[in-house]
Amino acid sequence: MVTLIDFLYSSIILSILIALGSLPSLISRIKLGLRKSEFKCLRCGNCCRFYFTELTKEDIKRLENAGYENFWEVREGKLCMKTKLGHCWFLENDRCKVYPLRPTVCREFPFFKLFGIIPIAHNAKNCPGLQAMRKK
Image (tube, rainbow, N blue to C red; front, side):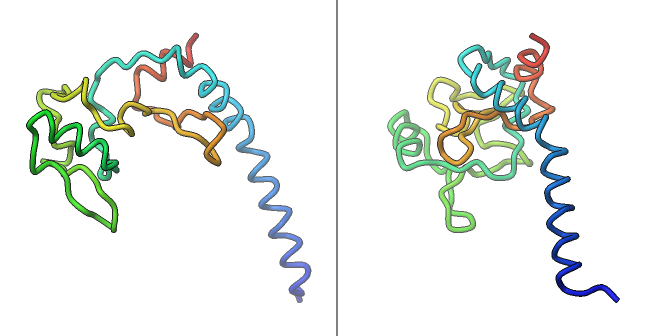
């Protein structure tokens, strides 16, 4: 019979082994994050097909000041881009029609800050710009 202590011990050991197994990938993604300045967006439009693109109030104001309207909504309590046929409201012919004005999250993709401080690359296999960085 397995005791609670045996179960907890096994769970902790398993968690550690899983974490150690993902460590090489995490280190690789942090190394890419540290090279963020080398990233070149190839404007493939793949990242424009996410279900949820969170917006800041500044993003909305910038786009509205440029004459765009009716492109955002509140979803799950957050400001976000509306989608059209499963992609970003502003994606047309696989191109962002507001690229110079694009939202902050789009400017940062495929990178984010782990714990708000450590630059890291998303595990975005569909981003050719990130794949090109990996090859260098």
